[in-house]
Length: 377
Ligand SMILES: [Mg+2]
Image: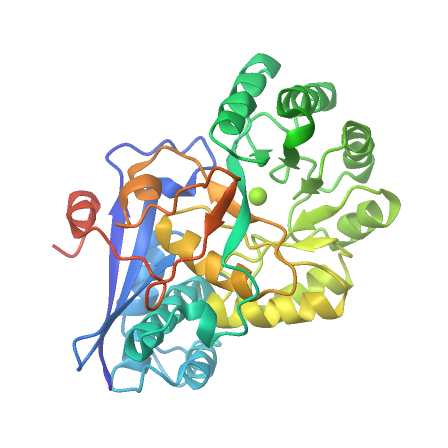
């Protein structure tokens, strides 16, 4: 089997609210086509047109090559070698950031393709599946007021979730308000629901402010504090993580095992959150999880986009040594709720099942793709 084309399709809902941290309003879908008629699907959570250009565009020379031209003619089943080829072929323009985001989408598509070729789900190809369902946490933006927060958590609890993460929005501006919102969430969650707080970079590099909030969240019994600081503020991360009991989580902005080595060894974080559509794909997420495990740190993949990222993260969660949670975006955007035929619903016990079909076990709804695509017509 040979790769005949790598297609990058940009999707965007008709009106995007750029003021909210909701990346499920647009998308970059990657399709890896082959001469045997099989196609693998992947997804990139990044700036879609820019990542698409890195795939489609002509490169320059040996270490600045377009990703599509690196792959056409290759055997798609040789994923490890192709990952290295993409990484080495884009050293000047890559190593981290948007090139690795683009590589991530291709890597996911290659795993989907391999699963389809072998008639097996991805989780059986990447390790020993340890579970067929994973406890989900509902992931949504933090409302503005305690009243709205109580309502939001009560609604998610009624849907069956046993864990809820609230993030970004107003957090980071007023410490008292941050704790009031978290207290409202804990109250509405009661004993049955874990509450996770995502500060969305809200404390910049200010260890004192973050420590104050972390201690308050500890008293409330919040399960983790995510991204209190900007991603390069490793010393702030270490100072906070070393001095508070509440686990400090981070990593959705990072990519590759080398990026996470910094976060672990300099930042001392307690939980890492690589995003499979940005960190280097399924292949690299597994290497990051291995590295984190060697530091005694669990991996909880970040996931906020469509059914593709949900499925890819579920397959990884199926094989991790421990799978604390599956992040479950509850944004009511068409990309989150309609892009894949399979909707991966929450079960009554608050878990979500790992897809069992070949590859990722989800297929694109091409009517939705056609409705939302903004280029390549
Ligand atoms: Mg986050």
